[in-house]
Length: 120
Image (cartoon, rainbow, N blue to C red; front, side, top):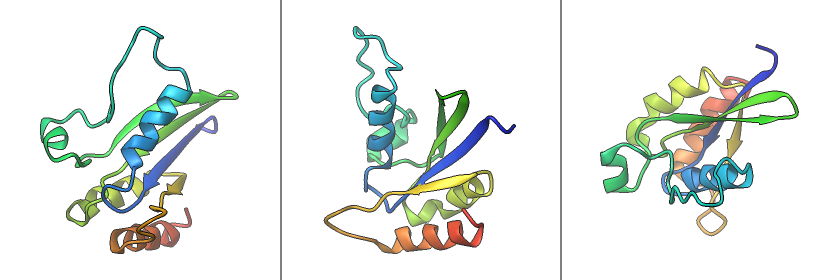
């Protein structure tokens, strides 16, 4: 277990969590040159694609210097706060994403408080 890290990405709805994960996957070169998985790779649920938001937390793993890093994309909408709290209880750390234009929003503050309460 010491070679595994669970990192949850938290932010307000529509502030770029899933897009960040997409870019990380491309940067990690997980796809061949002839593959084009598109955008919002982890939002595979039909309702998520229709609404353009993450509803169910999903993870993807990458390896870095012998460590398996599970990157967990969390929902940002307050209606799915229970899903975020469940993920935070499994995480070793978080990456807080804040929109540079809008700044911290209510859901950002809510999930940050939960993460800090868990010493993440």
